[in-house]
Image (cartoon, rainbow, N blue to C red):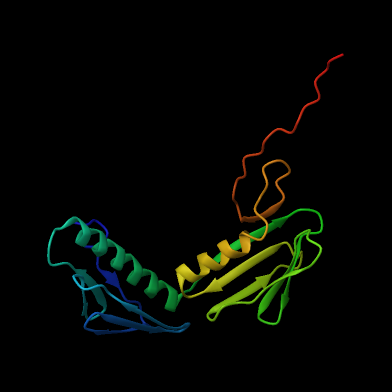
Length: 182
């Protein structure tokens, strides 16, 4: 048995779930999310618990069992509490500011970089302008937006400049040393 797939998903108050065959729709205080569960996996709603069942013990079906249970559990958390990722900008002159619903980033290039927020994503920038909080109800989309922003200026290993996740440890390399020669 899949250790993750067999766990039931508790549905908190304020979240409504509709199961129509292989389609699952969840509504909560933050919005609505939909998921289409692949064919061999069967979602079932029993009162305030949602379970995911599988018809066979084939290896590929077992993998899908755990996958769709995790996706549905993330949907429940997303529509009720939401997800967020925090990014830090480190470097001289590196800063972020809100521009409408998007971001304007100064990252040491000759021009500012603008990043428009996709639907369902919101940004917050600290007063220091070096911390960005990405919020949304879709866990995958929040993570993808954070990764896309991070790609504008990856953390370099010598001085540690760039965009990193909050609390991320970057292994620093030693710079070139001058040989004491002749």
